[in-house]
Length: 54
Image: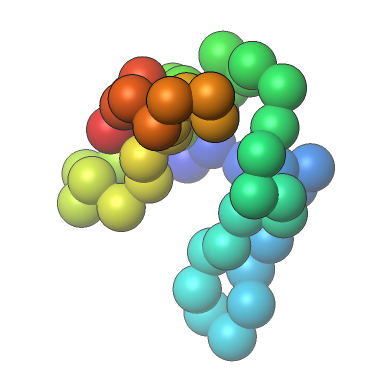
């Protein structure tokens, strides 16, 4: 499954990076984090750093 979120992630020298350090809640980003087979995407609460998705 491929999730393309060009407004949230960008490809830089073959490595995906977030476009911004903090974002508004977004179900597609949570889905990307939860479905990442390597666990490379983590989503944390900006207020307290608590993990939301991994």
